[in-house]
Image (cartoon, rainbow, N blue to C red; front, side):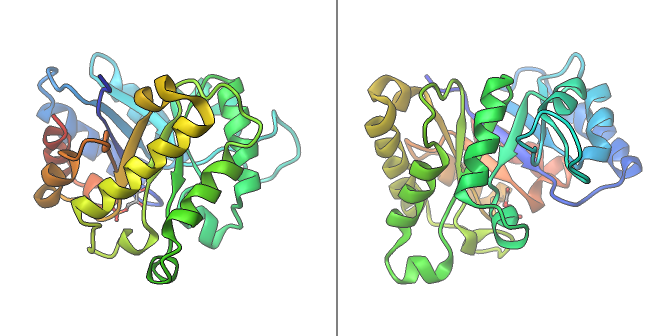
Amino acid sequence: MRTPLVAGNWKMNKTSTETKIFMEQFVKLLKGQEKSEILICPPYTSLYIVNDFKHNTKIKLGAQDVHWEEEGAFTGKISCNMLIDSGCEYVIIGHSEQRTYFNETDETVNKKLKKALEKNLIPIVCVGETLEQRDANQHKEVVKNQIIQGFKDITDIKSTVIAYEPVWAIGTGRNATPEQAQEMQSFIREIIQQLYGKEIAEQIRILYGGSLKPENAKEIFSQPDIDGGLVGGASLKPESFYQIILAAE
Ligand code: 13P
Protein backbone atom coordinates (compact mmCIF):
# COMPACT_ATOMS: atom_id res chain seq x y z
CA MET A 1 0.00 0.00 0.00
CA ARG A 2 1.33 3.38 -0.97
CA THR A 3 0.58 6.16 1.54
CA PRO A 4 -0.87 9.14 -0.34
CA LEU A 5 1.18 12.32 -0.25
CA VAL A 6 -0.40 15.72 -0.63
CA ALA A 7 2.22 18.42 -1.05
CA GLY A 8 1.72 22.16 -1.19
CA ASN A 9 4.20 23.96 -3.41
CA TRP A 10 3.85 27.57 -2.41
CA LYS A 11 6.24 28.78 -5.14
CA MET A 12 7.21 32.46 -4.56
CA ASN A 13 4.29 33.22 -2.26
CA LYS A 14 3.92 34.25 1.38
CA THR A 15 6.13 36.37 3.58
CA SER A 16 7.02 35.00 6.98
CA THR A 17 4.11 36.95 8.50
CA GLU A 18 1.70 35.46 5.96
CA THR A 19 3.15 32.02 6.63
CA LYS A 20 2.44 32.38 10.35
CA ILE A 21 -1.17 33.35 9.66
CA PHE A 22 -1.60 30.37 7.29
CA MET A 23 -0.08 27.92 9.74
CA GLU A 24 -2.15 29.12 12.69
CA GLN A 25 -5.30 28.48 10.69
CA PHE A 26 -4.09 25.28 9.03
CA VAL A 27 -3.06 23.40 12.18
CA LYS A 28 -6.52 24.08 13.63
CA LEU A 29 -8.09 22.22 10.71
CA LEU A 30 -5.99 19.08 11.22
CA LYS A 31 -7.64 16.28 13.16
CA GLY A 32 -4.50 14.19 13.54
CA GLN A 33 -6.21 11.23 11.88
CA GLU A 34 -5.52 12.15 8.27
CA LYS A 35 -4.29 9.13 6.35
CA SER A 36 -2.23 11.09 3.85
CA GLU A 37 1.21 12.46 4.41
CA ILE A 38 0.98 16.25 4.42
CA LEU A 39 3.86 18.25 3.04
CA ILE A 40 4.40 21.99 2.82
CA CYS A 41 7.13 23.43 0.59
CA PRO A 42 7.26 27.15 1.40
CA PRO A 43 9.88 29.68 0.25
CA TYR A 44 13.24 29.32 2.03
CA THR A 45 12.50 32.35 4.23
CA SER A 46 9.48 30.56 5.70
CA LEU A 47 11.04 27.14 6.28
CA TYR A 48 11.79 27.83 9.93
CA ILE A 49 8.25 29.04 10.59
CA VAL A 50 6.57 25.95 9.13
CA ASN A 51 9.13 23.89 11.03
CA ASP A 52 8.10 25.54 14.32
CA PHE A 53 4.43 24.77 13.67
CA LYS A 54 4.86 21.19 12.45
CA HIS A 55 5.76 19.67 15.83
CA ASN A 56 3.04 17.36 17.14
CA THR A 57 1.28 17.39 13.76
CA LYS A 58 1.54 15.21 10.66
CA ILE A 59 2.96 18.09 8.63
CA LYS A 60 6.28 17.52 6.92
CA LEU A 61 8.54 20.18 5.52
CA GLY A 62 10.12 20.40 2.08
CA ALA A 63 11.99 22.89 -0.08
CA GLN A 64 11.32 23.92 -3.67
CA ASP A 65 14.85 23.40 -4.98
CA VAL A 66 18.42 22.59 -3.91
CA HIS A 67 21.92 22.89 -5.32
CA TRP A 68 24.02 19.81 -6.01
CA GLU A 69 27.28 21.07 -4.49
CA GLU A 70 28.10 20.45 -0.84
CA GLU A 71 28.91 24.11 -0.08
CA GLY A 72 30.98 26.97 -1.43
CA ALA A 73 30.93 30.01 -3.73
CA PHE A 74 27.48 29.55 -5.31
CA THR A 75 25.73 32.86 -4.66
CA GLY A 76 22.00 32.57 -4.25
CA LYS A 77 21.96 28.79 -3.89
CA ILE A 78 21.04 26.50 -1.01
CA SER A 79 22.55 23.15 -0.01
CA CYS A 80 21.07 19.87 1.16
CA ASN A 81 22.71 20.30 4.57
CA MET A 82 21.08 23.71 4.99
CA LEU A 83 17.66 22.28 4.16
CA ILE A 84 18.07 19.33 6.50
CA ASP A 85 19.22 21.70 9.23
CA SER A 86 16.04 23.74 8.67
CA GLY A 87 13.86 20.68 9.24
CA CYS A 88 13.28 19.58 5.63
CA GLU A 89 12.66 15.94 4.77
CA TYR A 90 11.67 16.56 1.17
CA VAL A 91 12.89 18.59 -1.78
CA ILE A 92 11.22 19.34 -5.12
CA ILE A 93 13.58 18.87 -8.07
CA GLY A 94 13.07 19.81 -11.72
CA HIS A 95 9.83 21.75 -11.41
CA SER A 96 8.70 22.98 -14.83
CA GLU A 97 9.06 26.61 -13.71
CA GLN A 98 12.73 25.87 -12.93
CA ARG A 99 13.07 24.21 -16.31
CA THR A 100 11.32 27.05 -18.18
CA TYR A 101 12.69 30.15 -16.43
CA PHE A 102 15.94 29.10 -14.73
CA ASN A 103 17.73 26.77 -17.14
CA GLU A 104 17.01 23.55 -15.30
CA THR A 105 17.93 20.63 -17.55
CA ASP A 106 17.70 16.88 -17.17
CA GLU A 107 21.42 17.01 -16.40
CA THR A 108 21.01 19.43 -13.47
CA VAL A 109 18.00 17.41 -12.29
CA ASN A 110 20.26 14.36 -12.29
CA LYS A 111 22.96 16.11 -10.23
CA LYS A 112 20.45 17.43 -7.70
CA LEU A 113 18.74 14.05 -7.44
CA LYS A 114 22.05 12.28 -6.75
CA LYS A 115 22.97 14.77 -4.03
CA ALA A 116 19.54 14.66 -2.38
CA LEU A 117 19.61 10.84 -2.30
CA GLU A 118 23.14 10.85 -0.87
CA LYS A 119 21.87 13.12 1.92
CA ASN A 120 18.65 11.17 2.52
CA LEU A 121 16.42 14.06 1.52
CA ILE A 122 13.36 12.65 -0.23
CA PRO A 123 13.29 14.04 -3.76
CA ILE A 124 10.06 14.87 -5.60
CA VAL A 125 11.17 14.78 -9.23
CA CYS A 126 8.85 16.72 -11.54
CA VAL A 127 8.24 15.70 -15.13
CA GLY A 128 5.70 16.77 -17.72
CA GLU A 129 5.15 17.89 -21.28
CA THR A 130 4.22 21.27 -22.76
CA LEU A 131 1.04 21.83 -24.72
CA GLU A 132 2.96 21.84 -28.01
CA GLN A 133 4.51 18.49 -27.13
CA ARG A 134 1.13 17.02 -26.22
CA ASP A 135 -0.48 18.37 -29.38
CA ALA A 136 2.35 16.80 -31.38
CA ASN A 137 1.66 13.52 -29.58
CA GLN A 138 5.16 13.56 -28.05
CA HIS A 139 4.08 13.57 -24.40
CA LYS A 140 5.12 10.01 -23.63
CA GLU A 141 8.46 10.33 -25.35
CA VAL A 142 9.21 13.64 -23.56
CA VAL A 143 8.37 12.29 -20.12
CA LYS A 144 10.26 9.04 -20.74
CA ASN A 145 13.35 11.04 -21.69
CA GLN A 146 13.05 13.28 -18.65
CA ILE A 147 13.00 10.19 -16.43
CA ILE A 148 15.78 8.32 -18.20
CA GLN A 149 18.09 11.35 -18.23
CA GLY A 150 17.08 12.59 -14.78
CA PHE A 151 17.66 9.16 -13.17
CA LYS A 152 20.85 8.40 -15.15
CA ASP A 153 23.42 6.32 -13.23
CA ILE A 154 21.20 6.13 -10.14
CA THR A 155 20.86 2.57 -8.94
CA ASP A 156 19.04 3.08 -5.64
CA ILE A 157 16.16 5.54 -5.84
CA LYS A 158 15.19 4.92 -2.18
CA SER A 159 11.89 6.65 -1.42
CA THR A 160 11.98 9.05 -4.38
CA VAL A 161 8.61 10.50 -5.41
CA ILE A 162 7.76 11.47 -8.98
CA ALA A 163 5.30 14.24 -9.81
CA TYR A 164 3.64 14.25 -13.22
CA GLU A 165 2.79 17.87 -13.93
CA PRO A 166 1.69 18.60 -17.49
CA VAL A 167 2.96 22.14 -18.11
CA TRP A 168 -0.31 23.11 -19.80
CA ALA A 169 -2.22 22.33 -16.60
CA ILE A 170 -0.05 24.35 -14.21
CA GLY A 171 -1.67 27.56 -13.00
CA THR A 172 -4.05 27.55 -15.96
CA GLY A 173 -7.19 26.26 -14.30
CA ARG A 174 -7.21 23.51 -16.90
CA ASN A 175 -6.44 20.22 -15.15
CA ALA A 176 -5.66 17.00 -16.97
CA THR A 177 -8.67 14.73 -17.04
CA PRO A 178 -8.45 11.80 -14.62
CA GLU A 179 -8.01 9.52 -17.67
CA GLN A 180 -5.21 11.62 -19.16
CA ALA A 181 -3.42 11.75 -15.82
CA GLN A 182 -3.88 8.02 -15.17
CA GLU A 183 -2.57 7.12 -18.62
CA MET A 184 0.63 9.07 -18.02
CA GLN A 185 1.08 7.96 -14.43
CA SER A 186 0.78 4.28 -15.31
CA PHE A 187 3.20 4.91 -18.17
CA ILE A 188 5.66 6.46 -15.68
CA ARG A 189 5.27 3.41 -13.43
CA GLU A 190 6.08 1.18 -16.42
CA ILE A 191 9.28 3.13 -17.09
CA ILE A 192 10.30 2.80 -13.44
CA GLN A 193 9.60 -0.92 -13.68
CA GLN A 194 11.86 -1.19 -16.72
CA LEU A 195 14.62 0.72 -14.90
CA TYR A 196 14.30 -0.59 -11.34
CA GLY A 197 12.04 -3.65 -11.37
CA LYS A 198 8.49 -4.45 -10.35
CA GLU A 199 8.90 -4.15 -6.58
CA ILE A 200 10.25 -0.59 -6.73
CA ALA A 201 7.66 0.37 -9.36
CA GLU A 202 4.88 -0.79 -7.08
CA GLN A 203 6.29 1.13 -4.11
CA ILE A 204 7.12 4.45 -5.74
CA ARG A 205 4.63 7.24 -5.23
CA ILE A 206 3.60 9.17 -8.33
CA LEU A 207 1.78 12.44 -7.72
CA TYR A 208 -0.32 14.46 -10.10
CA GLY A 209 0.07 18.26 -10.26
CA GLY A 210 -1.67 20.95 -12.29
CA SER A 211 -4.75 22.98 -11.31
CA LEU A 212 -5.73 20.64 -8.48
CA LYS A 213 -8.68 22.03 -6.55
CA PRO A 214 -11.09 20.71 -3.93
CA GLU A 215 -13.62 20.25 -6.76
CA ASN A 216 -11.49 17.98 -8.95
CA ALA A 217 -9.10 16.31 -6.48
CA LYS A 218 -11.24 13.32 -5.48
CA GLU A 219 -11.82 12.14 -9.01
CA ILE A 220 -8.17 12.56 -9.95
CA PHE A 221 -6.92 10.85 -6.77
CA SER A 222 -9.27 7.91 -7.33
CA GLN A 223 -7.16 6.73 -10.27
CA PRO A 224 -5.07 3.66 -9.43
CA ASP A 225 -1.66 5.13 -10.28
CA ILE A 226 -2.18 8.53 -8.66
CA ASP A 227 -0.78 8.58 -5.14
CA GLY A 228 -1.57 12.14 -4.19
CA GLY A 229 -0.86 15.58 -5.53
CA LEU A 230 1.52 18.47 -5.84
CA VAL A 231 -0.68 21.49 -5.30
CA GLY A 232 0.20 25.06 -6.25
CA GLY A 233 -2.44 27.81 -6.03
CA ALA A 234 -4.96 25.82 -3.97
CA SER A 235 -2.34 25.11 -1.27
CA LEU A 236 -2.13 28.81 -0.40
CA LYS A 237 -5.44 28.78 1.45
CA PRO A 238 -5.72 26.54 4.54
CA GLU A 239 -9.27 25.40 3.81
CA SER A 240 -8.77 24.48 0.15
CA PHE A 241 -5.49 22.71 0.88
CA TYR A 242 -7.15 20.74 3.67
CA GLN A 243 -10.05 19.76 1.40
CA ILE A 244 -7.55 18.38 -1.13
CA ILE A 245 -5.81 16.42 1.64
CA LEU A 246 -9.14 14.85 2.61
CA ALA A 247 -9.83 14.01 -1.05
CA ALA A 248 -6.76 11.75 -1.08
CA GLU A 249 -8.12 9.42 1.64
P1 13P B 1 -1.19 24.86 -9.72
O1 13P B 1 -1.83 23.92 -8.74
O2 13P B 1 -1.26 26.30 -9.27
O3 13P B 1 -1.65 24.63 -11.10
O4 13P B 1 0.39 24.53 -9.69
C1 13P B 1 0.80 23.21 -9.82
C2 13P B 1 2.25 23.12 -9.53
O5 13P B 1 3.06 23.61 -10.30
C3 13P B 1 2.66 22.46 -8.30
O6 13P B 1 4.03 22.24 -8.28
